[in-house]
Structure formats: C-alpha cells, structure tokens
Image (cartoon, rainbow, N blue to C red; front, side, top):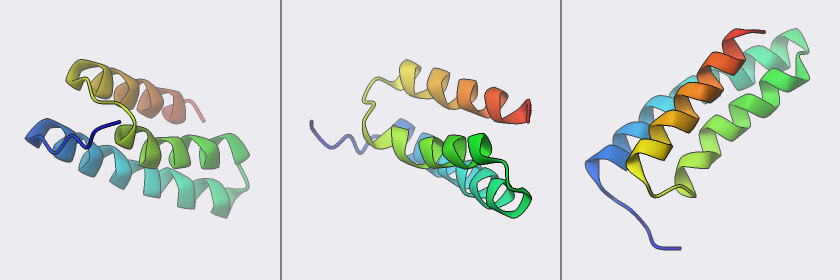
Length: 69
C-alpha cells in the first residue's frame, strides 16, 4: 500500500471525511447505528483506495446510501 498524495485523493478525502463526520455525529445523536457505520466508512475508505474514479464512486455511493436514512 503506497501513500497517494495527489490532489484528487486529498480533495476526495477532505470532502467525504467531512460528510462522514456529519453522518457519524448525526447517527450517534439520533441512535441510527447504520448511519454511524456509514460515517466511519466515509472517513476511512479514502486511505485504502488509490484509483481516482473508484474513490469518487465509493464516496458518492456511501453518500447516497446515507441519504436514505
């Protein structure tokens, strides 16, 4: 696993981690455990994905999934 410090990965990590923190806090406050898990996943996944397109697809997919709660 190499550290990808491209502008794409930094931007993706910043956007989706910020949204993940929001969903994590909202899930804890309202007692919605799947929202807590989605928030944690949004904060962590960008560290493990190095392909730019896959990074955005997973982030947007998690965001849409969290929106259903």
